[in-house]
Image 1 (cartoon, rainbow, N blue to C red):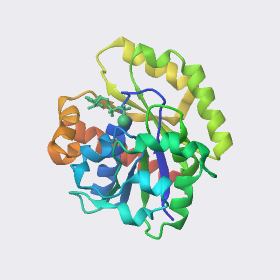
Image 2: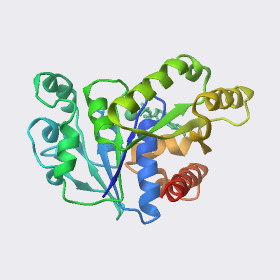
Image 3: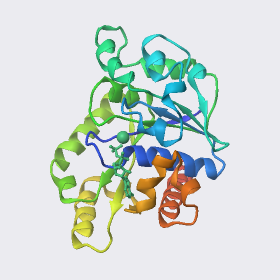
Image 4: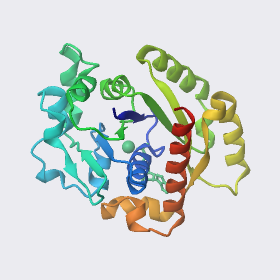
Length: 255
Ligand code: ADP
Ligand code: MG
């Protein structure tokens, strides 16, 4: 059985897509076969892995709305152990088209139940909202990773975010895999304060690994690569590899 993990936070720009791409690539680099599913109409995960959206005949939209098999939309990436179920801007229409459909919250789950191919991990990148696309991801997932940008605004509404997450976890039988700090600057007191406050809510669920803000992490998608292929010896690659290892060591701990 594949373990299915959604990368979610209703805020935009917190590092969901960057984390989806680089966690999956780092796990693949460690020999764990991964599938990325792009559930965001912005489709930055798809372009960030060098997939040309104009060449795609079908994408996640067709899986959700037209009952196309997930197998039929998969694309290879530059990495042996990493495949992607790509999205295009078409996916924006799914948010509307799903509304009147039966099982509108379960379309991705149903597609995954029929899916024959087994991956070690299936990682789903979510859009920055709590609409039907995110809900489809959370319903399908076993657990959720919440990336959080280390800034003052992360604290605003933190109580609300944790309430929302715990409510979703209950409704959808979802586990909180962990909370990951992204774009971290260890030099500022503010960063440390934010970490301490967030730990009060999420405690040991906060990963020890923190992803620093680096130019290479930001540049890699424009070359269609995860950071480990773009800048193999850099700090960003090291951080996401450390994160993948911490993620795996927690996995071992729970089995
Ligand atoms: P989300 O998917 O939550 O909207 P993204 O992963 O797209 O967030 O990140 C938002 C922006 O911040 C992007 O331009 C991305 O390249 C940049 N970014 C994300 N993580 C880092 C990082 N660790 N260092 C530098 N830039 C980053
Ligand atoms: Mg994104």
